[in-house]
Length: 378
Length: 254
Image (cartoon, rainbow over all chains, first blue to last red; front, side, top):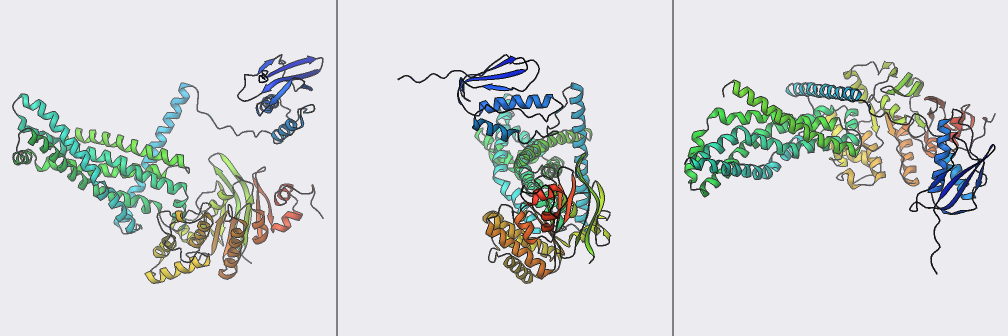
């Protein structure tokens, strides 16, 4: 026997004098065909009668249709006290609609939406930008105060926390820093070798790799690795502590959350970044040496050429920059964590922002350093 | 009896959004003071104002004769050392064990030697029925145990006033009852004043000596008094409705 066909759902409004009848027919199913609505009266009115002779099976789509109609009338009229008549509807449907209509719609719950006009958007963006600058300056000020308290011996934090962070952003970062630096040294040497061979000067690959690593690539690559690795971890740790009210708990016990959470992280990264940078420089030079030896430059000669090309000024530039980069990464991570909202989504957002902010700040700072060093003729 | 905490004309707001206005009440010594009201009415916000984590938009909070709201950071910090706070989520420091959670405030607040700190930690955990859990991390214990551990930490520095934010929410009836017994025991034996934020009627009636009802509709306090009296005789229908779970006569009985 063939399955009974499902007639499409339809709603027809029939006006007879003052009376308005709503005829509902067909099967009202979520996964069925679209509802055909006909004869809707121009003035919003509640139906006085229902004709359900042709109504088949229905699920939530039928009460949802009726509810939407009732609510649209209620919101368009000042007098919202008139209750729609439900007489004539099946008992189950009547019960569900009575339940849905029992509590009136709360007014003022819609969230403010962003401005639609270009000028409005520009205004909001400007306000947001200045808000961010202000919060950064505030955070930087608090950092200075916290450092001052530390220098006067008044800052309180757990030394075990400090050692833990020191290990996380020092020893634990060695493998990834080594891998990336080695590959960067390798790439620089390959590219340099191709060009310098044309002039028969491929020994100068050692100079190129050495100077590039100690001045720029060693410190910048280390800073970028640490942004993604440690800056993100700082933001996530502090952000989730905030979401879990752990920072409030610190405050009520009289601990300054800034001294307790930001200071050890800042000190640890500022201490570790120069060491990691020197380590990255040496590993990068070794990477270049590997390429050099494959191109016929004996390692000893390569090493001597590298040493000859580097002087104390060149070698210290990257290390000096690393202190500032370390502070930038720690501050970005901690600031985004401290300013995170109180939800797990906000923690994720803070982590992303921390990485983006610190990488941007590193590149901007590095450009500033390049300009300063050029002006100083270093 | 001198009022320990006095709140005058307190208005709480987030930016321009006023949560509650014109709150006036007093919490006496050794009271178990219940802050109650529907979900989202501002109970926890009021608690955060009382412990100094949020600034009032208007009004003042006094502890004894001292104006807590107007005090500077040092003075406020000294006040806060008299508080013990259990947060809604427990807020145990997740990177520390339960023992370390309790020992950290002890170590930082004085010059106790390690052995004495260990003794106090063991004692505080035993008070909340968690003897032997010193080396467990918060993530390794159940929700009810976390709440009890949070109370143990709140009591670490023998506070004068204990603030508990929804201590029994999400607990089974037996754990909830044990927690109430613990709260009563603490009040009687330690002499602490206890301020509890809750909307659980069983807890309100069984341990509350005085209750403040925050009315969402009027955005101010609906009533204040002993919970049973409010339930039966309050002249505010919203309070009777709340305390009788919606079953209440239209007018208070004489």
